[in-house]
Amino acid sequence: MDKRKKTTTKARALHRLKIIKGHLESIEKMVEQNKYCIDIVHQSRAVQKALQKLDLLIINDHLNHCVVRQIKNGQEQKSTSELLKLFEYR
Amino acid sequence: MDKRKKTTTKARALHRLKIIKGHLESIEKMVEQNKYCIDIVHQSRAVQKALQKLDLLIINDHLNHCVVRQIKNGQEQKSTSELLKLFEYR
Amino acid sequence: MDKRKKTTTKARALHRLKIIKGHLESIEKMVEQNKYCIDIVHQSRAVQKALQKLDLLIINDHLNHCVVRQIKNGQEQKSTSELLKLFEYR
Amino acid sequence: MDKRKKTTTKARALHRLKIIKGHLESIEKMVEQNKYCIDIVHQSRAVQKALQKLDLLIINDHLNHCVVRQIKNGQEQKSTSELLKLFEYR
Image (tube, rainbow over all chains, first blue to last red; front, side, top):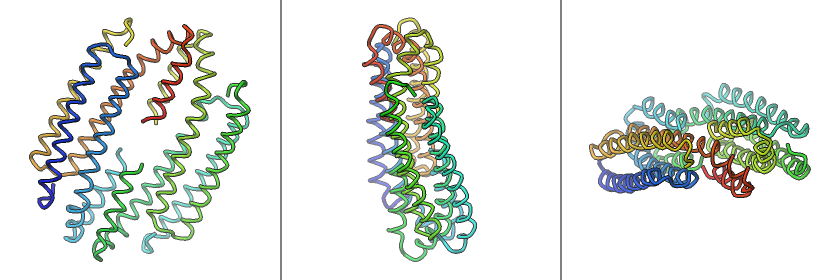
């Protein structure tokens, strides 16, 4: 990740990942305790949403730093093909 | 859309939209003829996938032309915030 | 679709499909008039959301009528495997 | 989860959750080591896909056991409204 914004985004990303890991562990407990399937699936989807928000945090950082720098430095081919892959695969 | 690639991408986009419209009309007929719900939903999802492919065609064109030009011309704020919105809303 | 609820759900589905077709035609015009890529993609995604809402209307009808009847009549294998496919493919 | 299939599905779900947790920890390390944003996002999406597969495993179990039993026991209202929510929220 870009060095200018690294500290903030990195710290926020790590904080979110820690919360997500705790959430995942609570899903493990739900499965172990034979909790109701529907409730487990809703918790799993909440984790997926949290990961999507993490992605946006990282993508925002990427757009504002890496992409701008890459395109200004003539690496537009690399930059745009990487972004297209992010749009394709989701 | 960008003028350099306009003809090709525009022609391809219009061709796809025509096919999608035909597909949508066949779903209308399925509903009118009381076809099986499950089959209707699968057809509706096929249209959604076709629209997603259309989006990728247009986004590819946008990345390679508009975004590169905007960032080289100092409009990076506009360019990156528009891309972030595309990632956010899907 | 089920006969008991057919009229209402069918009428609502056809009404929505008509609106969606109009929306699609306005996207065609946007492409023809070389409108800004980002705006076209947002409109395409609005159509996709409208189709997802149509799906939910039809799935709701299917669950409350077809699925309940199928399972009570011993067709649970057919019923559950069709639902699983809807969850898998999206 | 249903008692008939509990052992197998439960064991498989716990096994997958363990793998997903390991995957998440490797993403944490990538962030700590300032790895390239694009690579981090691709790994995060792989975790999301793995969670979606876990959901399908649990939903399959739910459909074949809970839903069939609920509908045969006259709890169709509860059963179908829970399924609709799963389709709505994703």
